[in-house]
Length: 332
Image (cartoon, rainbow, N blue to C red; front, side, top):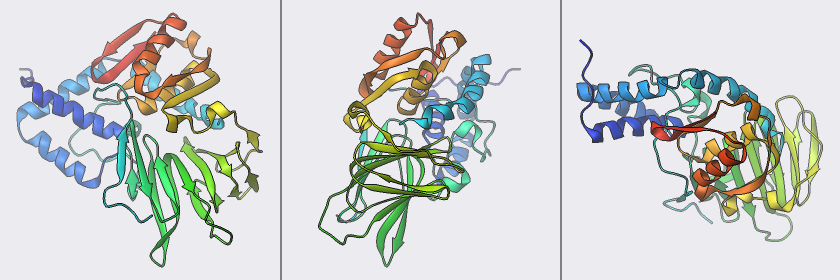
């Protein structure tokens, strides 16, 4: 006899919320215990989880294609006061919906399949954001950081003061107002390198083992085992574990676009555009049309209206869209 299916909409909703939490990157150690207790609460909870997993499994070849294309995404990223009691959080206006990246193999799953939760080296984050969330934190009297979606940072302190942070994953913007000469530089460690600035505004993006440092105002010194780069306003450099690029100019439209609520693309592959949209939008967009994968996209989209952006892309490239539960959309 087949196991009973969940007959309660609230239980189904909770099952999808668990999958969404695993996808968000905001899982805490205690969440694993809560998840085990939730599944063990009744046979309906376990059935609801099986249903959610089965809906993902219905993607079939699309799931395998997603895992393959994730490895290709790295090429995309060659571009571009005292701490408050409650950090200020803001959810970007991304479309609502639960997210299911992959099935949960069982109750006692602790390794992160397909990146559903942070890797072991990222558990110690002091601040983190979920999909579609931004967080503003005052690290000190003169350093403010804004965490973009799916971002994790860890403080580094000396004598009780925050002297630097480690960007474990994601993207963060740092604002350091000038207070005069002789100010100590603030550091941001990401991957194999470190960025230092005494004043100004800069951003650090760390995704798929590549780091992009962009200076918006002032000056930033990027130190890497392969060399040092001095950045001025509207300049950026990219590095990985072995090498560091030269210094490139950044167009004004691309500077801090995400802080203004927009995603800006210039001759960017469609597959890379969808990878970026997936960072902000709950759920997952899967591109199954291989002929359209490398088609260039130029334009800007509001983060608050990403489903409209997807509709525009679908029309522009003559794609067929299939909507699945959990905010999953298959483009073919």
